[in-house]
Amino acid sequence: KNQVEQSPQSLIILEGKNCTLQCNYTVSPFSNLRWYKQDTGRGPVSLTIMTFSENTKSNGRYTATLDADTKQSSLHITASQLSDSASYICVPGGYQKVTFGTGTKLQVIP
Amino acid sequence: KAGVTQTPRYLIKTRGQQVTLSCSPISGHRSVSWYQQTPGQGLQFLFEYFSETQRNKGNFPGRFSGRQFSNSRSEMNVSTLELGDSALYLCASSSDRDPGANVLTFGAGSRLTVL
Image (tube, rainbow over all chains, first blue to last red):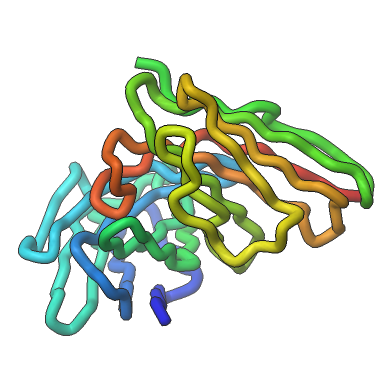
């Protein structure tokens, strides 16, 4: 059974600080992994997508890493801003199938 | 380039009623998938349509159904509503025939409340 575990479930950090979100997955078949950002009450928005052969991908202050051997990914946010407050969802995918994690809820406070 | 449009954004229904939600994908996208999101459950896959054909289906009861039209617009229907159907329903479109390989673009969602 495909499973995605994200940690922590929730996180509160001060504005300007860095943080790292974790994702462990057991998904087959596996070809890529995406991170989405979802603001409250809105649809998810893609941040990064990595194929199984990529180790890292950046999008501004967001940097995702992938270790396909250990089936782990992380999302690092640098110099957090209030607008980073959202849920971050890890989505490993394969042929005609994606599996969504339950997300990490991040709150950035002044 | 217009994004994925979902209507209505909010709706309130009572138990036993039925509801129809609409999704217009990005122009040129032929794959449309639907998801249910409830607090603490994450996104649960409902079904996916490609070129008017249902290609994949999640583990939801038959009360949940959908269809796709020739212009790629899609609708989903929930009959005999239950309190547990209260959720954010998200639609996503993709340009590739394989949504597992391409980036999904989500709409803003339809927030359904069942009283």
